[in-house]
Image (cartoon, rainbow, N blue to C red; front, side, top):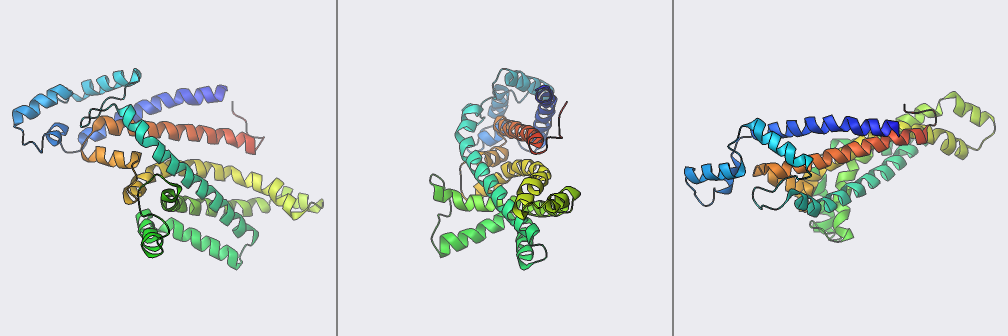
Length: 306
C-alpha cells in the first residue's frame, strides 16, 4: 500500500509536466482557432479579434496555462471551441468505443502472442518455430493501415463476411481488433519465445525434471510462470501503444472514438479537447503500468516493493 501511494503521488508531477508539454506544443502549431471558427463566414479581422478575446486566446500563454490549470484542479476540462460542449461529455461519449477496441486488441495480442511464443519455444528449430516467428516478423514489419486495407479487401469486398467500417455490432469489432492486436501479438510472441528458452535452461528446471516431474508440470508450474515476468512488462507497454494506435485504426474503419475525435481536434486546433484526451490516455497508461508492477509480486514472490 505504501508503494501504491508513493506511485500515485509521483504521478502528480508527471501529469503536471504532461499538461505543460501538450499545452506548449498545441500553441506552437501554426493556425488560429478563432480564424478557423470564422473561416466559412468570411469574418473581418475585427470579428476575429473579438472572438479571440471572448475565448481568452488574446491573453499571454502563461496566463492561459494558469487558467487551464485552475479549471483542471476544479475538475473542469473546459469546453470545445467549436461545439461548445463540455470536454468531459465528448470524452464520455467517445471513450467507450476506443476502450472496447483497445481491450479487445489487447486480449487478442496476449492470447495469440502467448500461443505462438510457447509453441515456438516447445518446438524450437522446427517448422512450427519457423512459422510462428515468420508470422511475428510480418506482424512487426507490416504497417497497421496497410494490414487494414488488406483485410477490408479480403473479408469485406472479396468474401463479404465482415463490414468494412462502422460500429455497433460484434462483427464491426473483428477487423479493427485484428489490425490493432496483430502487431502487439508479434512483439509478445517473440519475447515469450526468448524468455521461455532462457528459463528452460535454468538449473531449477533441470532439477525438477530430475525429480521425475512430468514435462507438462515442469513447463507450466516452473517455467511458464517465471517466463511471464518480462512479458507482463511488455504487455503493459503495448497497451499504451494500442491506445495510440486507435487513431489510425479508427480512421480507416470509420469508428467514432477518441482517436477520430483527437485527429479532428488537432486539425481544427480545438485545444481543450486535445488536452482532455491526452490527459485521459496518460492517466490510463499510468494505471496500467501500476497494475503491471503489482502483478510482478504475484508472479514472482521474491519481488517485494518497499
